[in-house]
Image 1 (cartoon, rainbow, N blue to C red):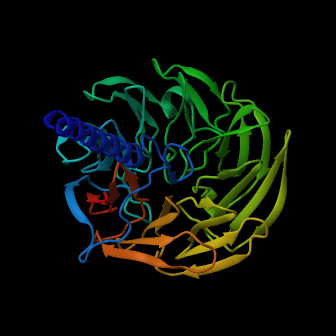
Image 2: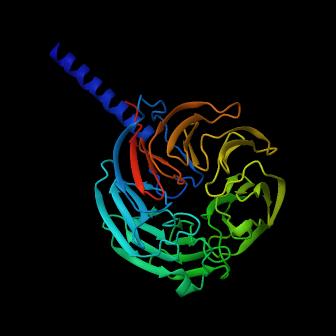
Image 3: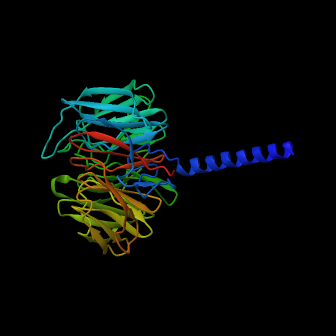
Length: 406
């Protein structure tokens, strides 16, 4: 009998361990670069708690960052963020769960509050044990992800002649094997991840403010680069322009990342411009439709089951991909941001209120909401490993919220 009970106990314990591992696998999900693992603002994470308790989700930790609009990246138990204080950029590495500062690296960089608060714009990118950042003036850094040691630094203006756009460089680093690509110059510049030496460039013209987005078409890899005057499909190995399409916005502010759906490319810009859906065939980009139903000044849209969800100046909207028609609109977001996880929209309003809503074209349906930050919030939140990370702009506070299933 004892032996039988012991076997049952061990079997039961094994089931508990297996169940725990399965839950861990379901919940786990690093967010090591801008717009997440799929470069589309969508997390693969499931099993997180969308129904907030009274008073909102538990705040695990918070920390001051300084002024900036950089988002947060999370990799291997560490969270990375940036901010500016006293004309100095600071790159932070925190323990992702406790908020303990692991390292901090600083370098001179002007705040440059030009019709806004100023500060950092790009987001750290983590890959293969390194962290890549880009400052507004074009200082590209490569740090050791664990220790924070500087591996290399390149000044894209001084060394490669890239012209600084009006509000400074803002695109984050895209890593493809041993190549790092920045949206600098006309359609980007590629450096070696090993030492920062140049592989290719696409001219010295002013860049756009978005990050290069990878996509695959007919078995070939490309990058969609939103430049100052339009969008282009680039060969990531050579920098050759495969196709391009004009899209001129006031002040050259093409900042919201393109959204790729098969052979379709969706772009949107603010300042009254609007949005457009292109179809790519060979070396040609053909317009399918264009309207003003989504004018995204800063943050990119997300896509689910035939519909785009994104910011239209001061409201959240849902558009039908086939027609561009507006399905619904809601002013909860203001000029905020949105990401998607497990069929749910995670929205941070420009006033610091966090909303969880169903991603459905039928109606805007809020699941839960909570006030999590004060001051202006233009930076998209991040869901990683059962925690939501968000930040404010001028106040520069990062918060980490617990949304793990209990």
